[in-house]
Amino acid sequence: MNEANNIKVLLVEDDKSLAITISNLLRVKGYDVTHASDGAAGIQKAFALMPDLILCDISMNEISGYDVFNVLKESSATAMIPFVFLTAKSDLKEIRFGMQLGADDYIVKPFEYDELLTSIATRLNKAEAHRKANEEKFIALSMISPYGIYIYQDDRFIESNPSLSSTLGFSREELLRMGFHDLIVEEDRAGALEKISRCQRGFDKEIHIKFRVARKDGEVIHTELFGIEGLKIKGKSSLIGMLTLSKPEVAENQALEKLSLSEIEEFEKAVDMISGNRNYISAELINKLISVFGVSETVREKPAEEIISFSERELEVLGYVCKGLSTKEIADKMFISSRTVEKHRANLMTKIEAKNIIEVIIYAVKHKLINI
Image (cartoon, rainbow, N blue to C red; front, side, top):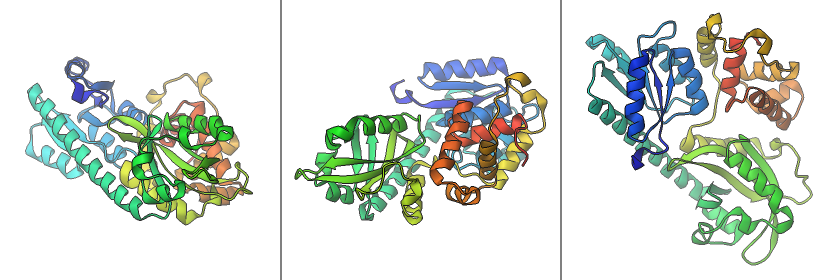
């Protein structure tokens, strides 16, 4: 049970009795199980929960397991989640089709529960090996990066690169016994730690802040920090980012684009390599979401009078997001700053209590708030 603690499994199954049986079995083994009773709910819960593994029936009304798989594999946020099909079909053509789509496994009903548990353990181990390989690639990249790069968890550094040590004057071994609270000067500490904590806990998707830190030799330097939430290491959410020297005369609230675009892109590529949790929106993904959520009135969760409305500016931002534009491209088209674009995105997510922008798109498509 200890090995399965904190491991989230999403079960998409329209057979209620079977779903209860599988859920109870997995919970006894220590897994955190969430059940979705149909394909549309499965897609929504996948984006909301970001599970460690998905078990999905194939033959479901309206939205089949193949539809669920195709939508989730189109998004970088969910593409790497191990996906196991459950089906009553034993035809070899069906099995071959499922595997050709890229599913990680295909279990035919009725099945022995040991077979299910073995498949889950095997796929999780494979995913963990892949994550570790990506982490090693990221660390290798960070070792030669001119920017100070860190991974932060439980109020301390769990990884740092040579550039960060050079900037702060502490060795890697010393930094791994420290946290930001040990570095930030007292006058800046409370505000900076609050923002770092909010991002680490998922309240903010990313942060870009400035503060002063005390080097090991006592010199106080001005720095700016860029961080992204969502990285999971050993089942815990972490913060990954870079810390660089900053010019004192640059105001703290200036926009994110003051970092050069090449610097941000280089860093985000490195983040993608290790976490894979950036939600890039492709036209194909939008089309698939529309095909799933844009045609049926039965998927509405709230009566019309309770539908949350978005402002014209928010809908404009959302429309550009749906076209696959980056934050910088949206800012240029709307003649606003990237920071303002991010604020609109944050407002959209806050209004419907979404964890990512794809949940917002699903909500808007379901309730016909945008025309794409």
